[in-house]
Length: 230
Length: 110
Image (tube, rainbow over the protein chains, first blue to last red):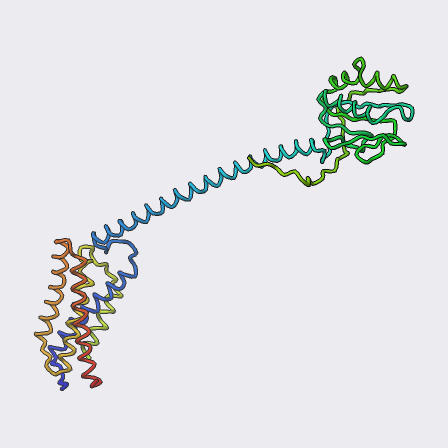
């Protein structure tokens, strides 16, 4: 079945096969070299452009969404920080009121010297009440007893028992508040000073730019009361 | 033997000259190559079946290339260039497979 090619046929076949090989080689190299779109048809270019456009639109939308959520997060972060700051301020105010932290500020220091038994619990309680009326914010006695809402006073053989602690004269009362108003509240006619002097004692008032109260009160966990939510 | 020499010479010239395909011809060259491959495989099959004719080979080679290129050109003008070239490539591919299957059968008798 295999007859030899004639000479003429062989050369013609060689020519055409050579032409094909040449073209293939050229095209092969072309594909290797060109990375641009010169060989792409217009329709395909349009398709490519369209898909690029769609991708672009989608990515732009994604950018917008992400940017919006980033702004949201930043806003909520800021408002959280503000709420936190307000809460801290409120906690500080309440802590000073409840006497659970130390405090400092301008105020007066009252020294009450009297013979034993002259200054009773009721005298001290009146003095505290007087100071509160004059706008005292923090009161402590002898540097150990912080006066808060639950503080109680009781006469004792050695002196005065304040919330369980026995205090002995002389009594030193540190009060934080407006110094002038507080000093007036001590020295007005018929006030604390007159009352103590009437019992043979002495009252010294000293206004100070900076009074530091380190005594703290115990803050018992309320056993019956609960916060009411309205 | 001589056709193999033609093959080698063609590859060598293509590698040495490194010509660039003109951009006007660029869409047609790949199709033309596939058409020519089909013609060459058909010729090989005819040769192995003992009924090779150089005139038929030349005519089929030239007309294959020409018709494929013309179809792509017309398709481009009508706006269905990519679809039509896909169709041409599919048809030629089927023919190439059929011819190689015949050649395989002749060689391996399987």
